[in-house]
Length: 227
Ligand code: SF4
Ligand code: SF4
Image (cartoon, rainbow, N blue to C red; front, side):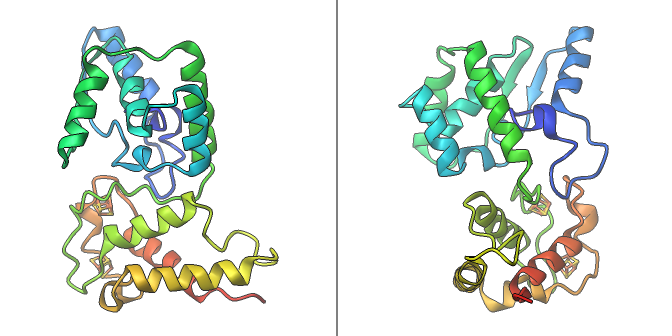
C-alpha cells in the first residue's frame, strides 16, 4: 500500500491486469476490523526517487520533508495501519523513519489531495512496475533484470526517454543521450539484448511482470531511429 497503488495498482505498467487497488483492499480489511501490515510503502523505493517536478511540488507544501517522508506519513495516516515495513540500508533512513513516526503528523486533506494528483500524474508514465527486489535473479544468460528496469524507469521519470513521438524536435538528441547513458550504466554482458526469452524468471517475480517482453521493449528503445 502506498499513495500510488491506492488507486492506480491496476494501471501500473507491466503488472498483471486485475491487481486490486490498495484502497479496495484496505476498505475490505477495515470492514472486518483487521489491522494492516504494509509492504511497499515506498513502492520499492520509487516514491523516494521522484521527478524534480514532483519534488518541487512537495517542497512547496513542506519544504523540509523528503519524498520518502511524504510517502510514510501518507501510509501512517490511515488509522488501521498497524505497521509499515521498510527496507532501510542507511542509518539516516532509520533516523528519518523514526522521526517521521514518532510522533506521526498525519497528512491533512490538502496534502492527501496533492499526493492523489501526483499519483494521477505518475500513473500516466510508461514505467515498468519493478520494485528491484531481485527475486528474479540470477538470470542464467547474465541479464541484470532489476538494473535494466531501474535504468529505464529512471529515464522515464526524468523525462529522458526518447518517446513517445519520434517526430519531436529533440528525439534524436534524446535517443543518443539515452543510449550513451544506458551503455555507461549497464555492462554489455548484462544488457536487455542478452535476454534469450527462456522464461525462467517469470515465475520468480512477485509483481508478475512479463520480464522478457519488457526486455524486448528496452531493446527496441536502443534501436529506435527516426523514420
Ligand atoms: S527470460 Fe530473459 S531475463 Fe528472464 S531468465 Fe530468461 S534470459 Fe534471463
Ligand atoms: S522479481 Fe520482478 S520486481 Fe523483483 S527485480 Fe525481478 S523483475 Fe523486478
